[in-house]
Length: 341
Image (cartoon, rainbow, N blue to C red; front, side, top):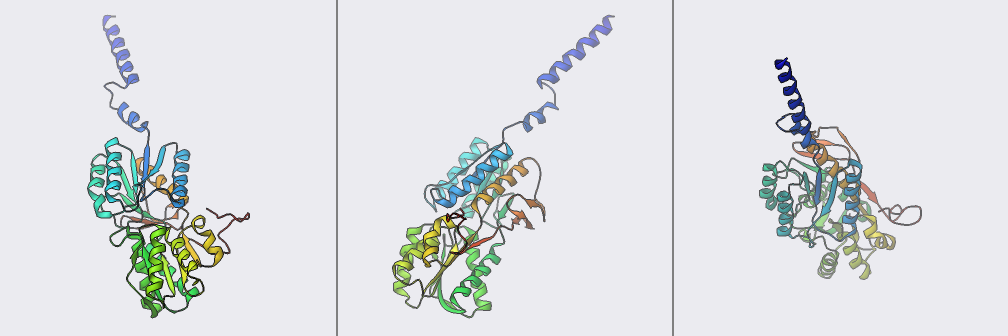
């Protein structure tokens, strides 16, 4: 009887420990799985329609997935020190995952390694072959996108002309923007030998005013200029404004990467012939979705269908979606005449 009572007491004690999770290894993973997931997207700058749109997608992903998701960035584009500081603070806080569009890829590597040491998932975008991250995820293949952009320039300008190109920051800068230009110039060299660069690519620092001023200088210096290819969302409206003010919309073809809400008036006026990109909200959503997958122990694979990114192509640790979009004055607006986004 005494022996039976002891056995009963031992069983009751063991069950109480299991209920509280004390001294029970099986309880530890359950507690970890229940931990709140927080994912932060660190972009290059704040305060432009592109980022407002991307933030929308990030927040939509957070709501759908039941996690905390937000977007932040330096106040000024190109502020490498501030971007590193933001990521360092997130690592110190112990967030679950981080998405980064690096201003300077090499500068981010030490803090990415700190994140990895703490078990924080980090992916990048617009930075192919980024060191220190689990994956780099792109909306499409960047070099091919640049080649296609040169084909679009030729469609409007013809196979002969004198062009200038704008990047966000000069290499290393944000790699994707420079890869687009590499692809465009490669296409010109191989398919359109009559196209000549009047000067080496120029840095517009993701700033419309800088692009405007550089374009005025280009027009004054190179009267033979017939085309401008821009990268960085503020570039297209900045260049188009300068061309329009100079009364050269029929002489100089402006096209590049941007979104309808930033370019509507210049598409309407004809000083901007076309723009292309992706929907920033879609990419914001899909990048948070991917980080959440990785946090939960899943991984990317070739041909996987990612919501709002499409089926991905995997090359090494780079994943490319199928999210390219294109607009002219004929199709940038909805049925009520408002920019699509």
